[in-house]
Image 1 (cartoon, rainbow, N blue to C red):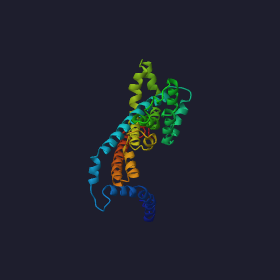
Image 2: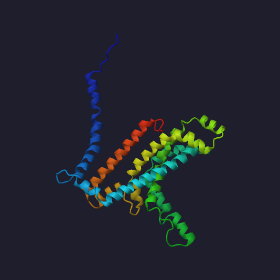
Image 3: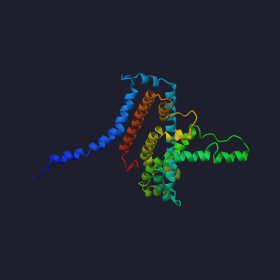
Image 4: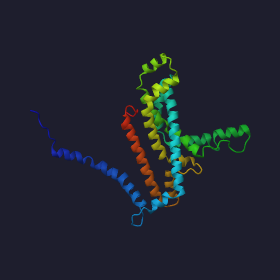
Length: 288
């Protein structure tokens, strides 16, 4: 006869108590501040109204912020996918000295703060940077020839540099699962490298590409430090708009409205990312 094992009620109750401290910390650090932002966005005079949402949604400043945010995020994500695929393909399938070290270096690069890249870009491509100073001395000009850094293109270039490793990491994991015998057979049958990439490698890497791209899209939508540090002219994203309204104009209600929109957009993109990972499976997406 099978024995019926019942956990003691006291043990089950003590197990539930372990969840209380993390929930309290989460409530204090996340849910309570978020609730304050949502409440402030609905009016600060004790009433609840959507009037501020209507005003913000109808303003050109908000429209420009949404446009800049999406344009930079989509452009940066596309650049990360292209550059990440090319670099990962080279590291995984083109033998060269230091390829293994280059693959391991990616994890270290992910941990670096974003301002280091923007600071390096300022030293290299800024108005008084190394490249412009050299070109001005070479051609005898008084104005810097390169002026892309302080624009939307400079922001996208910096974000591509920062977030490409987030695409390369799952790609390299996915490439490691590809049987090299498939590539050898395709090559022995006369397939050119471009055809091997298109018909053998790319289909196997597609889940990792989609997962890495969705993660980059989420990160670039919320990027604040790069845009602020570069100081691009007329490039106001949603996070920058929240900063400007709250810190510079002291318009906290408008800042909270925009912050709520940014949070909803971020949660939607995060949900898309999680759905993609669940749909393809963590191993196929290179995330396990």
